[in-house]
Every structure is written in structure tokens, then in C-alpha cells.
Image (cartoon, rainbow, N blue to C red; front, side, top):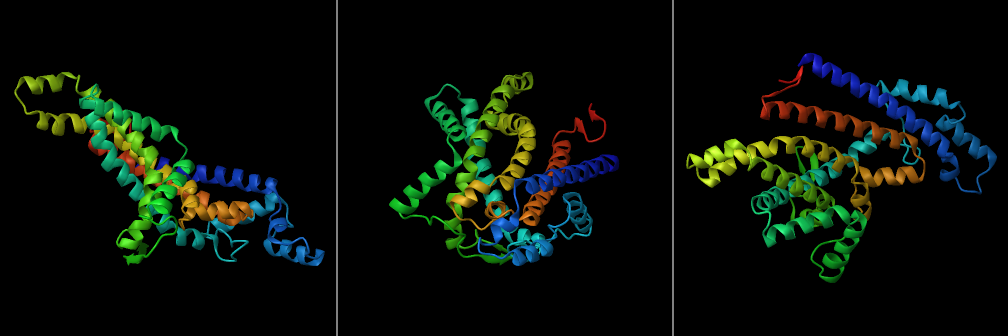
Length: 325
């Protein structure tokens, strides 16, 4: 286990280094942030002052190594726009994004697993075919279009749910959350469902395929031959073997929910990391973009590590050192 954790840590460090280098060079090639931050009426002296203040008068390789040296001490630089530490800006927005991602994941599991089980147990029924049609639509329809339609229907026409913002929050262990207040929950439902729709479709299809595969295996037939009730067969044999591969996918999808909530947060004006990164890219705020991507890589790595450990616990045949038996 210790050697496995060490190898994963080294992989994360290498990934962070390569990602930071590529993004830094990419942002440097895209344009000059001074052209975005200053108006066209700025004097050459004012431009030079800003360029020197941001360290943009140095060669790109020197700028990168300065950033790297500070990053090793936990300093990811100050935002060009807000003049605040980039890491603080990200951490301020992180609770909103994490809450949105976790609620979307819960929606995907609560809706996707039961629908997938039903579709797998009765694949030829009309209800099952309707479920699979819904999953196809969930895969096919663009997230931004679904979000706009939901705003038009539930916010504008029906007036049931608010169209933007996070609503009222309360502190839970010092972290502001929305789901503990009715106003916050009403603001959370639309963006969370919009973000979860693709994942619901994915969970439905994975669960259905797993159930249909397991139901054909010999140990299920043997359990039926012994007279075991169908509910126990489903609970003990089918669900356990179906959820094993689903754990890995769910873990990876949680990472993608956190990283790619940008569209949903932009449509619903959700004050999370995704909206911040879009605004930062628009003004070439390099420290914020780099801080966001580095934190995202770290979260991906931690989530994948937890998934690997859980997978080995659920399926004893899998060992973290030495592969499968």
C-alpha cells in the first residue's frame, strides 16, 4: 500500500508540473493581459508600470520559474484583476462548486440506479424502453440548451424556481451551504439537475448493462434453484456485483462534475469556481487560471485514489499492489 501511495503521489506531482507548464505557456501565447486590463487611453508610462508590477517584462521562462518557486511554498500568485491571492479566490468559490457537484451526483445515483435496475430486469417493457429513450436524450441534448429551457419553463413561465444565484446560505462546520435552507435549496435544484442529467443517463445505462449481465450468470440461476426470493437475489447477488464497476465510474464522474461545471455555473450565475475561471480566462488572469487547474488536478488525483481504495475494499480480488489475483 505504501509503495502504491508513493507512486500515485509522484504521478500527481509530475501531472501538476506538466499541466502548469503547458497552461502557463499557452496563456502567454494567447495575448497580453495588460491589453485587456487597461483601457486604450492608458499612457505608455501607465502600461509600463502595470507590466513591471505583474512581472510581465521578464522572459516567459523566468516568469514560469518564479511562479513555480512560489507555488512550492503554497503561493500561487495574486490575481491581476482582484489583487488578491489566487488561491484564496478559488477557495472562496470552492464550497459552492462542491455543493453543486455533490448534489448533482446524489441526483444521478438516486434516480439512475433504480431506473437502471428496472430497465435491466424488464428490458422489453414499455417503461424500460421509455427509460432508455430518456437516457439517450440525456446524452444527446447540450447542457447549455437544457439549462436555458429549464429556466424558461420553471422560472419564467411557471415561476416555481429561481433562475440564478445561490440563495440564502448557512454555515455548516464553517462552510456556507445552500441545501439547508428552503431559499438556498430552491436555487440549487435547477442547476444541480442540469449538471446531473448527463450523469443520470450514464448511471442508467451502466446499471442496466450490469444487471442484465449478472442475471445471466450461474450463481444467480443456482440461487433461484435453491428457492431464494427474488428480492434477496437482487439485493445480495445482483446489486453487489453491479455496483462494483459502477464505483469506479462514479468516482471519475465526480471529478468531472467538479471540473466541468463551468457551463452550468455560467448559465445559472452560480457563484462557483467554474464561473470564476470563465471570467478569469476572459481577462487572461493567469494566476487564477493556474490555481484553478492545479487544484482541479489535485482533486482528481485524490478522488481517483479514494476510488481505487474503495474498489479494493468492495472487490477483494483487486489488490492495489500487484494488480488482480
